[in-house]
Amino acid sequence: MVSTSKAYNSFEVTQIQFDRIADILNLDAATRDLLRVPMREYHFSIPVHMDDGRVNVFRGFRIQHNDARGPCKGGIRFHPQETVDTVRALAMLMTWKCAVVDIPLGGSKGGVICDPHNLSAREQELICRGWVRQVARNVGPTIDVPAPDVMTTPQHMLWMLDEWEAIHGEKGPGFITGKPVGSGGSLGRTEATGFGLIFTLREALRELGVKVSDTLASVQGFGNVAQYAVRLYRQLGGTVIGVSSWDQVDKVSYFFRKLDGVDPDTLLKITDRFGGIDKDKARGEGYEVLPGDAWIEQEVDVLVPAALENQINGDTVPRIHQRVKVLAEGANGPTTPDADTVLRDRGMFVIPDFLGNAGGVTCSYFEQVQSNTNYYWDKDEVLGKLDLKMTSAFLAVSELARREKLFMRDAAYVIAVSRVAKACKDRGWV
Ligand code: GLU
Image 1 (cartoon, protein in one colour):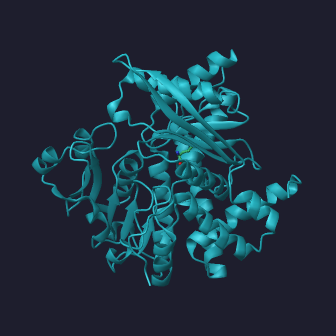
Image 2 (image 1 turned 90 degrees about the vertical axis):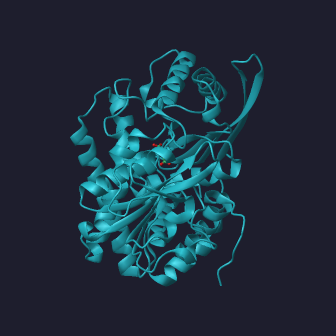
Image 3 (image 1 turned 135 degrees about the vertical axis):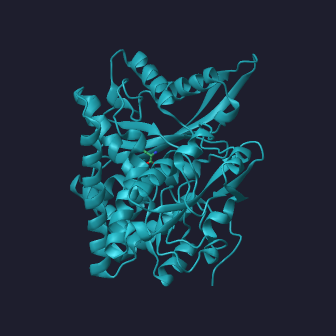
């Protein structure tokens, strides 16, 4: 029975997923105790002198879930609905993400409750600098390395780096990733998450014996991940029949559909920097403008949620069309456990979030290596290494899934959690 209208707490969702795997792996009580909650949390206030003379106090977080495999790694989100539990959940997912692609990093996440849509560049800069001032001694190239996430940009990262370097009195470009190219950023970082997702989708379709050029996809979102995913999937011959995006004026999302295939270049010209598509201009370009949740019920082969968490849940999962074969999760935590049960029973091929969207952090790792050695690679080298890493991680997961008859999400978790549990044990922590 599918439960409906449940309020989902992302942290509980990730804990439920972890408990399932802890049972499969028969983990001891101490390891469970250690891994089901973050190791360290920083909660703080950031006072900002606003342009109109008032002082606004913003709430910020940095949550370090586990660093047994290396320095913590994870993005910083700016979002008006940010909660501590969302950040906790995402920090935990980062630990599994770095482990499943086998990069030597732990997991963390940060956030500030704010809406950059309503903040000037100066106010955003002060939030970035204020965030770093609060945790400057608890983050750094060998401790915890932030990066962009929802509504944060390379410019934000550079302000944060500048503040960190000012406080420490030294250059430290390896402190943060997702920096602008030319200021310590890596070529390919912008494309990395979307491209990485499509590298894994390409392998999934190959395994299912389906040609990419015979497939249709429907995408939720048109931010950084979706934009590059759509681009590469099209280059491989696939057709995206629609993307959804948030409308800042109407405060709802819309699904922009074009059955013979959306053109990302046209859409980009009418998209703001947060991924919001202008609906009137889209109509002028021949797009149907449908309610935002229509992305999930399209008659396609591939669904790509690349927006926010908890989008595929008990309420929405029955609306997925029978034709859908692959769910390629670009967002973090887009599927709730009750919806997962339905997908599992249906035999859906799921590319789970922390595997599918690991291209971003994998390229961040490459950026860190380049920054720490102060030697930068060309784009083909970055994207070639990314393809190799994503493809081998995917193959390891799908091989385990086949061999042990596991759901893909469970197989990815089994690999990730066992690597982290082993690192904790090897260090003598548990
Ligand atoms: N924010 C991205 C993620 O959730 C990238 C994190 C990183 O590069 O550290 O994977």
